[in-house]
Amino acid sequence: MTSPGVSGQVSAVEPSPPVATAPAPTRLRELVDLGLRTVGGVVAVVAAVLSAVLELLLATVRVGGHLVGASVLLAIAGNVLVSWFAIRAVGARWAMTLPAAAWFAVMVLAAGGTTEGDILLAGDNWVGFAVIFTGAIAFAVLAFRMILAQPAQPAQPARRSDGG
Image (cartoon, rainbow, N blue to C red; front, side):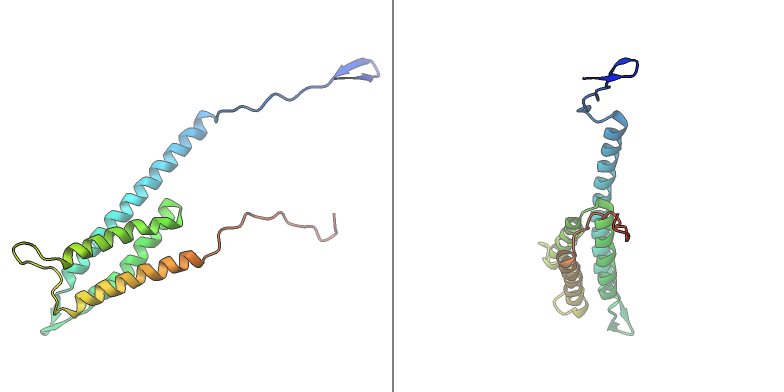
């Protein structure tokens, strides 16, 4: 395209076509981000399993011959904390299902007996039932809150008050 000018013809500079591939540093950053999110999910699952095992070990703690419900409080606090970590580490709301599934799997395995008759959660242990109930409720409440939470809205440009 040309346009007449003072000293003759001036050619306009045409923009170059956009590059279709992402530059190498951006691609590397995406791969590192994906790797860190994956590691975060694995850490959340391992933390949930360790929390469940610790809760099972503390379910039989007695003081003065009476069961103490310390593992019930640990189930609530641990499940809330590990769910929060999973959501933050993975960067998605669905990530809370990773530690929830691992925790439930450990509890199901603990509730079933072995062929030798060993069980980790006895039927006469109120703490074991309370751990399963409160741990499940903690995950359910967090999942319900995630369902009700509004999705993040993109930032709106600020409007000028002078109408311009």
